[in-house]
Length: 405
Image (tube, rainbow, N blue to C red):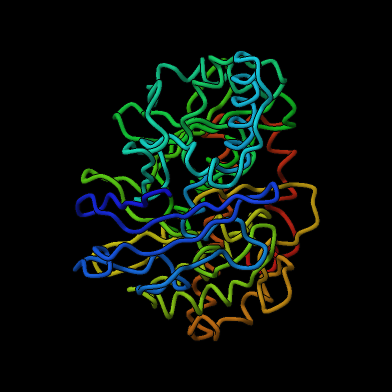
């Protein structure tokens, strides 16, 4: 039995995560705590977990309840956890155990866990801090540790240093939690030795362009370690008061990893769940136009999210926007009900589903197009060599860009 707590407007018990083992696979369920049900600040953890008595189980094809799974590790974090278990088992002379979904969830460093939910087992929040979140001065050590993991040459010390990530944001790219120069919790994303271009630099380019296009983005910087760019993104689920509840768009839709969903479904969810629905629908329309024009092809629903304020949910800042060259221009999320083509005309034709007039939609697209024209200037300002600019041209210069520029 795992106690589920929320660290927001005070520390309070939210519910209980139940673990049931059998036939080599673990099943889980969740129940709300009576104290949470009567709390004046109580809210459902997701639309599919309404407040009330009773037991909730994951949906079909899911191993964890969606809002709880948001604070589980991403692909990179799971790789680090499996390697850590393997090294620990080797040192202890035992066989490595197969990690279940709840093991991944509880293995995340408590200090850097995404959102405001926390998990207590045997009177201790999981996972205990261990080495803690390193400071910016450790950036070079973290880069070297991540490269050794990628090569399969990591030590237990490397894994301990990288074990802190508590985010489902960022997928398979090597990363680590770190404190920036202001002492704020951030995520550092590192290059792979096999990269054809600096993915980290071009994420910084994309977010810089997005900000010019009027999109709210996560605060970020481009640092250097070992002579290579490292992307630092400040965690937007933290402020001076502490943690902020976070819910991915995937969890808001009660979706499954690996499946594609429509932006029109997300617009509908915004209408029903956001406390600023008009603002958020316009913002979403702007973000989709931007993804189309910069060829951001990994726009799945974990790469969109919501933060909870005093009144309820609203869109989080944009994050994980990565231009991709030399690939078919097909998004991960559908632009219409059933078409994922990165087509600006297709997107424009959906404006009524965002409750936008044609003129307003055209104005948003024009503003985004005007901002993305500066892609070479922004890239050069961030130190991009000319060979990288040539490599990335197809992500920014294409038929859809020609239509609106």
